Image (cartoon, rainbow, N blue to C red; front, side):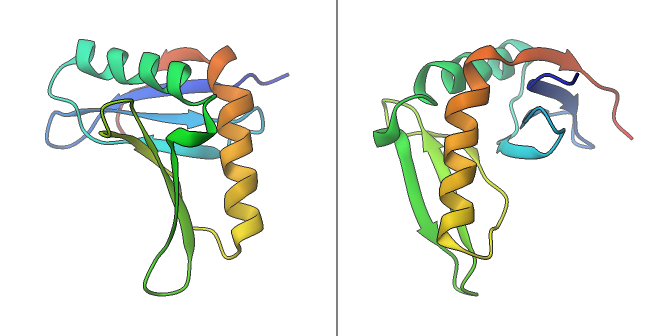
Length: 113
């Protein structure tokens, strides 16, 4: 059985990024780029802490009519952003998935492809 995970990788610019994946392997939250591995790890801990708090989510609509959300830390900084969803209900399910999966997610490093 799969488990929720924070997948950490280095992008082409040498920045560290993470994706939170649900048990089915689908990406439910993606981070910004971090200049250090420790910064990325701190970002993951922030998702675990803030991800359970409904007030930390900004529920947004893109100009093209798609829906997405940002998860923010207590200081208002964006920790991660969702993929685009076709409906508000799907976006809200994505938020619930972060709330459920983030606290128990492990961390796994992956090599860039």
